[in-house]
Image 1 (cartoon, helix red, strand yellow):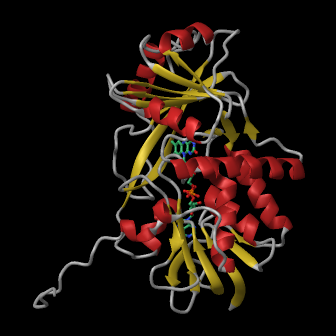
Image 2 (image 1 turned 90 degrees about the horizontal axis):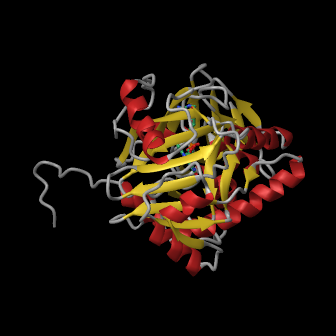
Image 3 (image 1 turned 30 degrees about the vertical axis):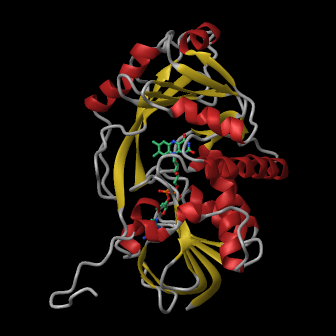
Length: 381
Ligand SMILES: Cc1cc2nc3c(=O)[nH]c(=O)nc-3n(C[C@H](O)[C@H](O)[C@H](O)COP(=O)(O)OP(=O)(O)OC[C@H]3O[C@@H](n4cnc5c(N)ncnc54)[C@H](O)[C@@H]3O)c2cc1C
């Protein structure tokens, strides 16, 4: 049986970042049931929004600041570009507080922003038709990250660090006591430390009575017909009519990608795959019809992705409550890509037993563990 210092389960963007970092100083192995970058999990596609003032909570702004810096470091070393800082905006109509929260985060961390109405944003960026009275917080520290480029980038770093990558290799069972992984090909490996980054499959691997849901999401890309279009990434929470929209131009700026954060909230099994359909198309095209100009109304392409949702939509980054040397990362509530390089640093602090520079209280696993049902005949004290 092969022995390692560190085994990383799952090589989506989270596991790849963790493996890239830990393989700098530990004999490491990363295992994935598919060959990444693949389209079966949550990390595929061309790009993801990255911004310095996320509206999900102040801690995320700290992670974002570190992530911008680390992405830049990695880009310099590899001679590649991962982050495109184009500027972007958060926008909402009452009663949603989305834009107001982004503004407060900017103020708290003294990040630059400009506040304006939807009408003013539409005047400056002629391809938007947002409601005139919408609140807009336009921010320069906003853009998109090359998703599959950076995913591949982390895997390349891991390979250069001599990590073993076992791809197309499913882990059938994790023995947390013996720290042994049983692989689909019948072999076993052992590691001193195990980092579980299995995305939507987490619950299949580690039975912790965790409150996790897996939901289907769909994205659509629309041709930008206006040759002078200047489209920047955005999030628009339409409190009045409903819809938590987000969008960004493709890396070649020829198409606009649109998603809706809740989409149809369809719970699925992790392995379930359903192709995009008419309902998805109508939902996403509604945004293009109502809130943009100069964009073709028929999607040029569509793709399915999945969210793993905790009950409060905050991530899990923690030690296993019962097993030393086992760590769980679930950063997939629809907003986890932008912090990718930071996961490696956080994993390193866990494995080294050192204090992390971030307060990780909000990411503790016990928030998501349901109490065991009462045992018959046993009266709780
Ligand atoms: C539609 C959509 C839009 C998004 N937009 C944004 C955005 O704009 N900005 C942003 O910051 N974030 C965004 N996100 C979130 C971000 O993409 C996710 O947080 C991130 O991709 C999660 O990565 P992951 O590595 O946890 O999961 P995954 O990519 O799913 O990786 C998990 C990996 O584990 C492997 N695995 C699981 N079980 C096993 C097993 N038994 N054996 C071997 N391998 C296994 C899987 O094969 C998979 O490769 C979005 C997500 C979606 C779905």
